[in-house]
Length: 326
Image (cartoon, rainbow, N blue to C red; front, side, top):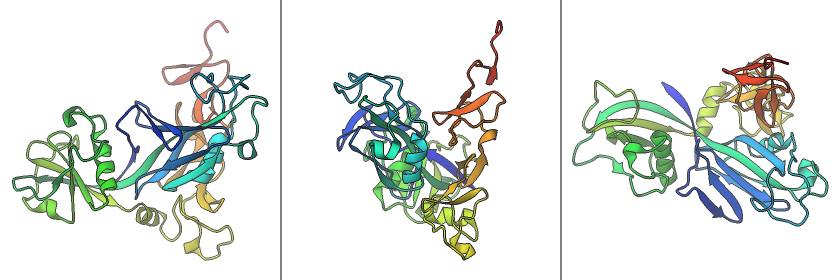
């Protein structure tokens, strides 16, 4: 059975500078990168994973003391509703990309104000559940704790330990399996060496193994996974040509098309794993792609790449309702 897990390329510190751009780790594990107007934003995921854009804005919503200080700052309510779509066109489904923060690309949403580009993203990768196996001394696979800064703190209390172990093993470059033991301890393996001491009948369902028990996961190449999901054709994120004639050269998932030479979901549809889902089925808070178009709830709309309640309504118990007294 194969699962699609959404992961983020994590960093050890809450705030780091990387090649002139600001990278901040949010509590939900998304990465947010930003550059000032006139600079180039660079996004990169580990090998075997692909960029998934979650939000983006070219404009300004904070003062210069917080980001990109400049004497020409007049508007702090400056947003470009097409920012996310523009960045997604360039970066979605790629391992790395570069985007120039300039008016020529995004337009000028607030003339006379010095702007910045801010983008939130995660790195998507596939792995398959190989269930649980005994782990004894001498160990047949390699312990990764202390060898990658993504493996932060005490592994028993680590947030999102499975995805962090995936990133650590993937960045190492030589492992094709990774495993968790003793409620979060990270290991990397090669081939089927994890089978040496035999399978465990009662595998803990939390996916983090136990004492002497490894919950093993197999790496899946992103390109292979996309090809498998697409069937006779190209999967989402694959390079394509709008002039393709053969079925195997066309975008295969329903409601997708070759857009700017990448297989992407068409307007009013949003990527979910290897498929496109209708935006008007998305719940409040979900990432959306078509601005000012409806989401799943009757009073919801896509604004700044998120499904939110329309003006005049408020969110109450996961619904958009008109407040009493209106």
